Image (tube, rainbow, N blue to C red):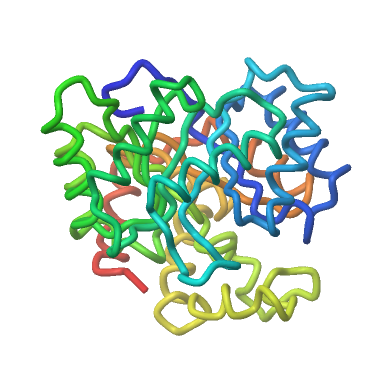
Amino acid sequence: MGRSGLWVSRTALGTMTWGKDTSEEEAGQQLTAFVDAGGTLVDTADIYTGGQGERILGRLLRGAMRREDLVVATKSGHTPEGYRPVDGSRRHLLASLDASLRRLQTDYVDLWQLHVFDPHTPPEETLDAMETAVTSGKARYVGTGDLQAWQFATLATWQRARPNRAPLVSAGTEYSLLNRGADRALRPAVAAADAHVIAWSPLGRGVLSAKYRNGVPSDSRAAFPHMAPYVEPYLDDRSRRVVESVCTAAEGLGVSPLAVALSWARDQQGVAAAVVGPRTLAQLQEILSVESVELPPKIRDALDDATSGSGH
């Protein structure tokens, strides 16, 4: 991860559905299967299902799972119940980290990420809070969540300008064959800071699995009222053309469309890990089964050409 000594599995397990679309029992089954397959990086956030993602992970960490086998990553910065939507102040961030640690039932997180940029707090104050978390031992490494390129570059530059500060080692962003917006500025900014990208939604919110080619399956995210608005932007004509390109590549290689899409995002230069958020154990098992798939350079080039300029 970046220039640090932190190593993570190139596929990360996301927990955004835990406690809502994924039961605690199934979350436990997912985590066990993930670790058994060699996975280490588990990504959560203080706002996922009102903190339920962290609580479930915390109970699992106290149960059958060894804490040292996992690289636990969480995020702070959103304030859905607060008087302002985001808060990057020292006061809020450190209090949020303490609350996350209580929910996770652990003394530290391996990677603490600033979930969102707060334009009303000086960057040096936000970074000082992150430094405090590292020096206190409550966070081993720090990174960012969903920031714009200039925001990440601002923070990374401030941090590197101050001697012996813990560097930002990662930047999370949505990144897939259906959304290549990070190619324009964020990936170059992250590379310039000697950090790595954590790519979330590498399957284009599930659309790149080709499950929506012939309509909306009744058990899919797009069929759930609370998730349909999340998927619908990728059900347009341009996205359908990209999905057909993925399916053509998959047929030629004798693998699934999911394998093609995940491999493309996961193996991009500068990407440390691709975060998947399966609702079910069966979905995770399919993802884990394609871990060894690597796209030939010609296929990667063809997909690059077919999707250049993609970015919702």
